[in-house]
Length: 246
Image 1 (cartoon, helix red, strand yellow):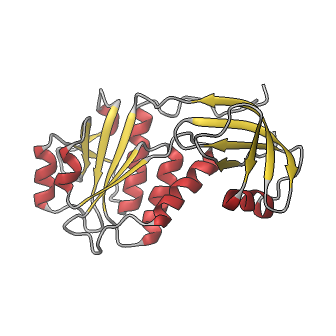
Image 2 (cartoon, rainbow, N blue to C red):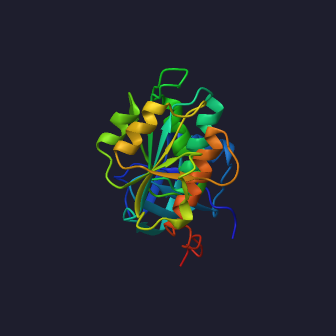
């Protein structure tokens, strides 16, 4: 099957008939991907909808596709939140958001840690990273992105089992945990969490876990920890989408 490119469309788009792609998405499809008539195409809306279709017409500024199949994916009952101290480097944040979104992280909770070296802010480029990652994978739901002024504020309304990555001797491997269908993993920034933040995490019931025999940078710890938790949640057992013309 040829490579399938995904594009983002409004949630009000029709489920049958045709979709007309315009604006920035049309520019990407026509000028960058260079889609032609008869080629497969797919669309997502970020809130569960996915369309499979075939390009029927390409003009200078618009692309028209015939809808072959529409499907809706309800939100998974299993969820995983990455609770991360804000990092200094944009490249590290981009890596975490891009790959984390592709993996299927349900929610990013970024907080201003005591050792975060720059102020936390939610910029437009973060939203672009999320959208691009969902277009790469065909993920139906955009992850939630929330920011907090402190770790305590990030934990106040969290509902689920909390874990904190630490090198503490009492930490256990994630593989030994049970009942983590709704789970959040706390990862510190460069320089790790402060002692006060570790105390706060434990106050909220966080279970100390380790990620293996090595000490990793924050961005690798975030992604590795996410994979280990989601693997334990059996998030990767569903096979890839295929035969979408059926």
